[in-house]
Image 1: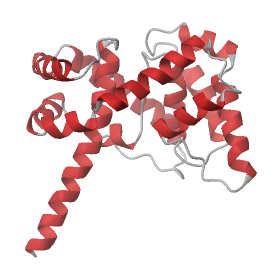
Image 2 (image 1 turned 90 degrees about the vertical axis):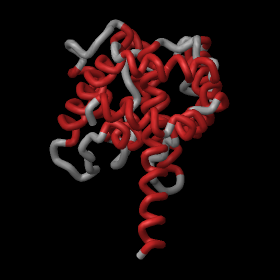
Image 3 (image 1 turned 45 degrees about the vertical axis):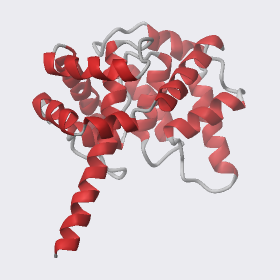
Image 4 (image 1 turned 180 degrees about the horizontal axis):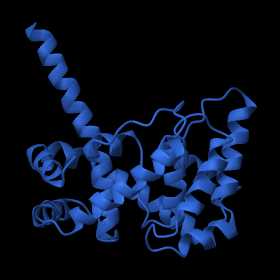
Length: 226
């Protein structure tokens, strides 16, 4: 979706986006990032952190019985891996990052047959928040092509989307109209502790939720007219 369309939709549905982008959600996000920093990333056995992370990011592996718990253990052990943390925190952009992205993706792919790109992005973002979060809401907001769980080239397609997301965010960063919208949001939400890129990331995430709501409302109205 061109940046101009994103700005148009934000302006048209500002109140709905602001409602989704609640202070409670912002505080939950801050708590996850601050806990991770305070614990120096050693979260493999910290159940309170894991519960908050799972609930906030809707982390599910859709597996039965003990297997779900084992998969979560693998995920949080990966998130706690000191060597991986050092590698990811070295980077300031995607130049040269593809190998690490693929490595994390492959390890998560072994424990999940769904949402691998989403869970990969959330793990990487927690370690180094300059990298964006991806899930269905971001895909909807940016009008990216859907990546299916059974797709053969889904890892490469995910990497391509990752690049597209950051490219769009870089365009939004310098967009004057978006900055006006951001000024409005900052008057009503305490997001001063966030970098501008993270503000864009979280606003986009919530924009996708609103777009889906508006679509459903329109479908309902069309159904009633018929």
